[in-house]
Length: 124
Length: 165
Ligand SMILES: [Mg+2]
Image (cartoon, rainbow over all chains, first blue to last red; front, side, top):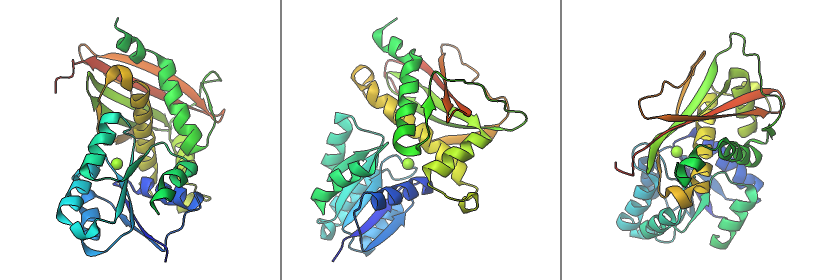
């Protein structure tokens, strides 16, 4: 069965762009959910087993990094959920921080459908 | 002037950053050397900005005419019809363009500037907007032509802070 996807971003524009790029990348998911904040994303993950999460970093309220850390420490039942940060951040220090928090990878903005395929395929 | 300041005072870095964003995500052609004048008439401008903190503190803003902002939004969101657009789509899109341009610039200058924290975007609309500089602030501007029809103005205002929060 195909995987489920959760897109977390405080910008509805960005969520739509991410959705479109996923479609253009040729990857398919059985169902796609959206959350507009780190808090909402965490809630969704507490309630449902999601396979892949594409998560913004820079959000008002709980940041993407804080959310990943919370998921990894408070939701051990979601250890198989793969969380990929989608962000304008791409410094070595950021990547190290994201990985330490428990992220499985990152995609830097601006991005192309090819970048999605390259980063997501190995995780599916 | 330090090497870092030379980088921050180089409008070609601004042009390069926005060109990358437009090429990858907006799919509209940027022409940095082309005609860069657009008769705005009475139409308002849309300005999206992000502020940043690090070795230098400041903000990056991107402004363009309402017509151009609409075109950017249509492209970025792949709308086929204007009717699909929600009122918040334009500010949302322009904010994201500012955010991604700052992100690209940050990556380009990372070796020299190190870590920079970027805020969430703010978007305003109005006529004849310009930065009012505070003491010690330096402004760098660049204009690019978009789709041979519109112009987008970029302003980077910064001040050396030495990285103290
Ligand atoms: Mg965001």
